[in-house]
Length: 129
Image (tube, rainbow, N blue to C red; front, side, top):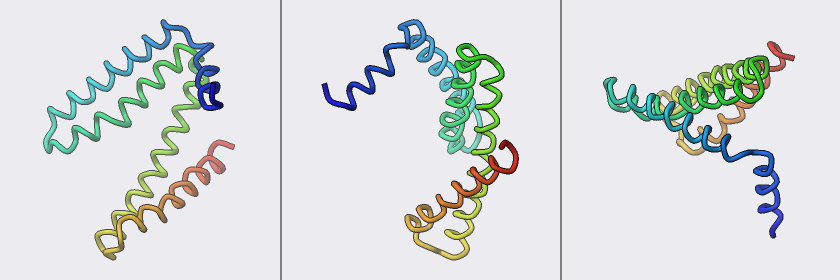
């Protein structure tokens, strides 16, 4: 067995079939609900936005509460909020540079990811640590 296969197998040993099925069901229901919400809104470009990150975050938090308790889930939720705030800064800077300065997309997005990293860990250092 290769090293990567051993790591994957070791991760799954402590996870029961019930938990895996629960993750699939909760994740599917939440993602489907957000996709339906996105389909109801105009413009249709919101469908992808609502079908991705918010639904996965909520499903993850629900499963975390069930498995590890509310205190641990609140820490995870706070981390998600700080990451989202850092992403807003990243998205604003990338949008500004692409639209106003007409910089190349790949170079701009790649360089600005360091900004997200700095914002996320800066927020963590100031507010959480």
